[in-house]
Image: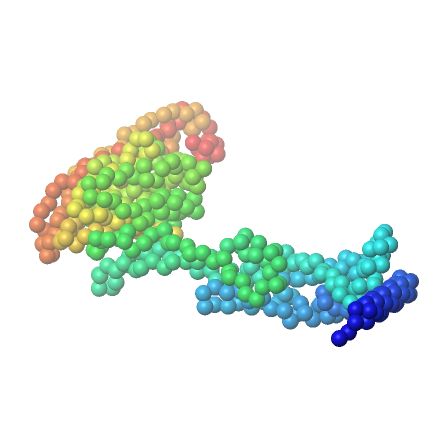
Length: 462
């Protein structure tokens, strides 16, 4: 058995060896430190992005690191997923770059701080444990926008409203809506900014978009009651715009049983702020320029489709002067806060109004339930009388004495009664009075000369 003395001697021997080893290590470390400390290059054991840059100058290190990181950026791919779809983009597509200048400066500063002790440990232990500098990355905003544009084009689905169509055989079909989807650009940008290069896959922030009109909106509607169309192709641009705006207010308008609708309430304020343009309007029997010209063609076209659908007309007014886009006695004039077109759904089910203004023709369709209408309606206007215009005589000394000049030719007035015929199986089963209409005559103005002037230009001015 080993004696106590031998144990003590062995312990002393091991302690001596350990002490000598520590002294040797310290000596070697000191020698290494003093030699390495005088190196003008990046110290041993330092890496940038995992790439060794020991004993390299700043310029040499930048060349080495840039060559390798550029390759990585070209080859590194990010996978964006949504459902079973996957979209792959390289880092290069994002304009991804590394701030190598700052990284190289940090690598060079390893062992070169103001603290001698810190420098000693950094220089001495870096070859053993390695010091890896991570370069800060950045993306190019224009490149990111291009990727966003590309992803939006690939993932965006426009929602489609449900709508009614009429097949050639007269069958009314409800076309089902389609749900859309969109990429949230703000959320996507945040994902990219949150160190996205270290992720294998990124779920795209895509959300569903519900359509505005769904098929249940048309429940109970299975028949086209009536359709009426007027032409406005020769109208000026402003009038066309007014017709488009006003008619759009009625498109897909559903009216419940017993519900009363006011044309003026649906259209709202007819002002420039609401998009309405200046066009010809009839005021006091005379044509003049005003905001909203053309709106009366919308009310008139709607009115005809409503009567042909046999809906209850609560309020209707004819124009003060004849118009040319429908037969006299079948028009419906509207004026804000004065004349309105009001109607009521007198059926047991909802009705639906559809409007279309394509720049040439304005049309209204009225749909309802087939149980409520098994007949058609025809409007029959009948002329009651013609009223000759009054002749107004004025005098002017700018015209030769005795000479007459017609300043305004005037126009006749008309009186109409309009009937509604109900037709079933091709036969008129009833006929009733619908409305009376009176269009005032336009005065004829004659100027009689009292002077001696023969100046034709004066006559032109009159």
